[in-house]
Image 1 (spheres, rainbow, N blue to C red):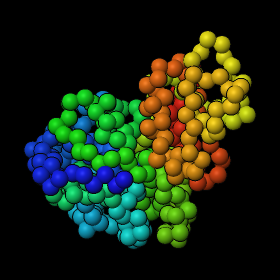
Image 2 (spheres, rainbow, N blue to C red):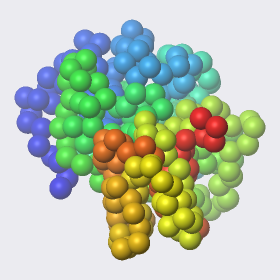
Image 3 (cartoon, rainbow, N blue to C red):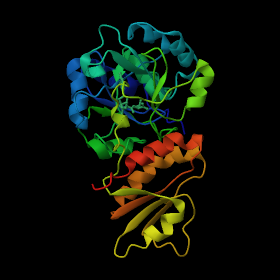
Length: 323
Ligand code: TXA
Ligand code: MG
């Protein structure tokens, strides 16, 4: 389902709320975002308060189309032009040198800004009706699992937001690929469903992994996207052994059907295709988190490149050792 349910009246109300400094949660094809007018400092501050997010973390600015890009960045380098052409609207965020007017509260005081043009029809309508940039991190409390349905957003924030736009279950299911193009050579800041290979094919050059000079990104903290229940990654051949802990209620996100000798309290069999696994991942983690298990075990996924972004997210969902 593409979730294109919002009526014109609803969209206009969302745009009006944004224009008056409101907080509007909105669906995107990756995860739901928590939106505010990116040009209104007080409104963007409300996002940080609602999320419980440190104030120096930058937020992405969502635009309706590439045509608006030039007014948010200092200049549009050729690689950014190419990536926009190839992947926007879609699950790609580009970090570029910011235009002078872009607020410090949006950039985290850095001289760059993250920009994304989402493809979800409801996000598109909202952005077009509003006309400006919408600052929008994922609509979850800081460090928690990102929401992929409007119900997830409600579970995170209750009635404290001005509006939650309904848009069905997010198609992609994990956050956008982030590439930094602000420093002359492309650097991957966060893997996503658009792969490094796809970026390299369009760019005609290598995309580097982050180094010490890379900008801060909260989605790159070691522990992020995490359930409240202690969560561990487990190798497929260690699953049976790990499940045998006496007196512990275990929930499993597995890559196979429940075997007769596997004594978990809750068993979720994830799709075996990477795209569908990503689509379901956060809903599965939220479900497991709701079943009041003592421990969530996530069966490790394949080592291959198509699973890169998923390996990244389940690695961050896992509770750091000694915590
Ligand atoms: O798919 C997505 O990107 C979703 C949807 C709602 O668009 N948004 C999202 O936002 O995941 P958020 O704030 O949860 O994650 C964005 C990441 C953060 O880790 C932030 O630190 C990083 O992007 N980021 C934003 N602006 C940046 C900048 N100027 N330089 C470096 N990192 C930046
Ligand atoms: Mg987030």
